[in-house]
Length: 164
Image 1: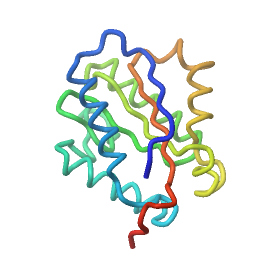
Image 2: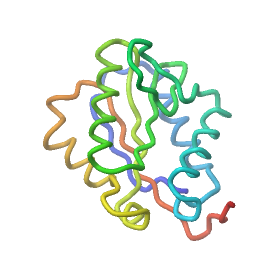
Image 3: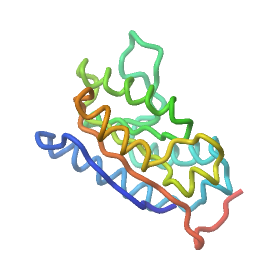
């Protein structure tokens, strides 16, 4: 797995610990030795979540006990990591959930990990891709969402070993 694109919004006043956690997210993703297309979405998400857990992130937790929503991973500095490998509508819904956590002081920022367009097309139809989410955020949501957000686009590499 490789990082292909990164874009950040609203990180001007973010704590250094959160910035460090974003860097740790990049390291975890870059070190993941598998292809998303060879594993499929559910297995790739499970494997990536296990990498975050091994690096000290809390996984599959509910930051707001009053809500039934969970997040894929969260750092001790309250950085949410969401693996947006689903359809476009679900990605927008997940952004709204992360905004809820931010506005209610359960999180400090969010990282959205999203397939690049080429990978999204390989994974299926209507899968959210980095370019679409970035464009939607830039044009529609930048004035609605207040949370600091980093979008990380991922792709498979030809030299990544296939894991069963």
